[in-house]
Length: 327
Ligand code: NAX
View 1 (cartoon, rainbow, N blue to C red):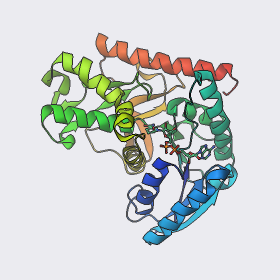
View 2 (view 1 turned 90 degrees about the vertical axis):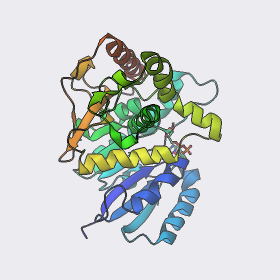
View 3 (view 1 turned 120 degrees about the vertical axis):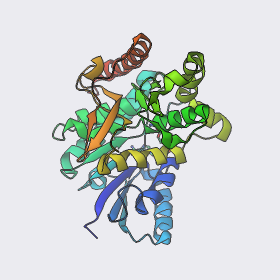
View 4 (view 1 turned 180 degrees about the vertical axis):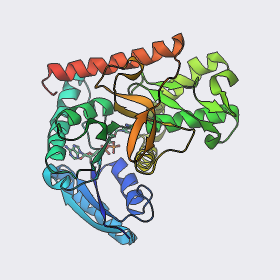
């Protein structure tokens, strides 16, 4: 067995944290040969709950878990860390305007970016889960100027997995039979799940379903799935969000299969007309521990309009955080 990899989870006492930590400790994220050292970052009032989770982790006697540290100090939490899962965020409260929400999250993601910049390991990989995920990632990234920009990502994988599942159910096939799914843009209701490039049996899924279903059922079902879960469960997605975070980091580290791709929000290099620097959902492959944006896909007018609308929302969020002095 190698030396343990330090993995930091923020918001560790929350419901996604509870669904995530056991899977990381069991080896499902970094593989069965990689021991992990967990660092749990929480706000002071939640430290006791985090300790409870750590007690349960101990009680699992995971052979790969080499230790757990719990702290409310970001500098300690990110010291030497190689994988940072930024899950803790400030949810939108009643009557909260977008600017208030962004400002509150700036108060979390700015110091976390600074701490990552100062103390994380050279190979640090960051996945932002806490919403608004893409813009929180942009805030953190801006305050970590010494870390290569491509190490900051935000999670589109839950939307991706939701889209795979909806498309597979429609076609009556297994999820593994659908390839090349993409979620473009923002992790929000404006996201664009793309069936024109997704394939089943070597042909675009869009050619195998009615356009009316694609536009008026599939896209809204995927984009509003989070609200449907809250309505049904009385709580937001937790196990599926944790599962998506595991998928994202596993593929980042281990690579994606030949002839397929996944969705992740990565820093735009200007591909597909997405303004450089925005952290947007793209089709991506991974090899050698880094993401590459899949190039040269044709976007027809329908897809172009949907991508542009979601990217415009991201640009609006970027302008708002600029105005607030957060980037
Ligand atoms: P919970 O409210 O259960 O847990 C959040 C935890 O974060 C709490 O324990 C809180 O004490 C902690 N926290 C708050 N500020 C912190 C800080 N500055 N440092 C460290 N910890 C801090 O929320 P949960 O259901 O776990 O969701 C977490 C985040 O994931 C939310 O922002 C949620 O909106 C977001 N989601 C993102 C998804 C995605 O696909 N990107 C999907 C699922 C989820 O909705």
